[in-house]
Image (tube, rainbow, N blue to C red):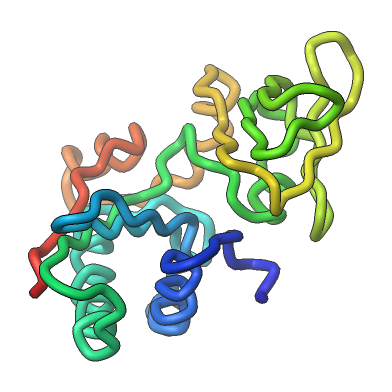
Length: 195
């Protein structure tokens, strides 16, 4: 699998494989895909621009229309479902090795599927990653090496330093209100109901 794609399994991995080429053609990358619910599931797609800037509501709508068309044709989920597209935001998940390297020096919380050194939860400063392992400097000064394939959840912690470092990620918007939403990383997800 492409090292720039997040690690997923099952249906979510299939969805990533289906929609990643479309997003790539449009100038976006997948940060995370999640399928929530059973009866009428919601497919959540979190994306970034390839240039690293935060996406805005118009970007979410563009992605939603393009991805919705692909998923309508491929029909990977039986029955009715909903598509939600959003920005990764500032306190984003770390789903790819490149995310770990991009946010080196910032605080993160990580939970692993299989205990590492007897622990499942870690908190510390991101030290980067290679293709297989993410590294954190823990509060006690030790280093934790966490297998990326075994990470259940990894997310940056919102700090003043992260906000300051993320300011260049906010693209100029057409109006001041959109710019403020983009800076805060709290864009309203674009979505549509699919059958």
